[in-house]
Length: 261
Image (cartoon, rainbow, N blue to C red):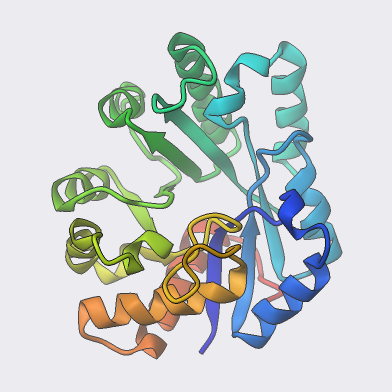
């Protein structure tokens, strides 16, 4: 069974003691590709990981938590990095009204700049939205052609109605550990109604470890547990889920280039 972890934070300090071993465990679990999310302190943090391993790719972006820290130099640097051959998407970007670590108007402005960047470089977008669903979609749809190069609704935890809204404008939905949580029936219903060609699996590690690892540090190898639960939800096999989610990732993010995975 070959899988893709479509969203992992390999730069996180929780992996500092054993990052190489974490990556080895992922490979042993059948994870053939990993998308490292580049929204850390250094904009090229995920690129650094991707340059070390042929099966790791990268995103770049300013997380809404960090929007207030963005400067003109930040956006110039993003433009320099966006053409890197291993940068597959712009993200995770969006709005977070739960923590409000950055003022909401600043979040919206930084989000808009990065949507423009993605369009200019023909990249998919990876969306983070928390308690900001309506404003997130207002900004997306204000662009006219909402997703000219596709996008991922990362760590999807909405219900079936929100899933349909995202699907209707062209998103893929990334399902992670929350899908396995006992009380997450609304998320499982969203996963049931998602077309096969729009499904992705992810860990968002080191956060949100799936059952049976809940409460522990998450890591890319655990994407297999989410894939197994997704198969149960959809009445199919883990192998079928692995095949379709890997195919979907390649079609969305690896268009026009050969994968080393």
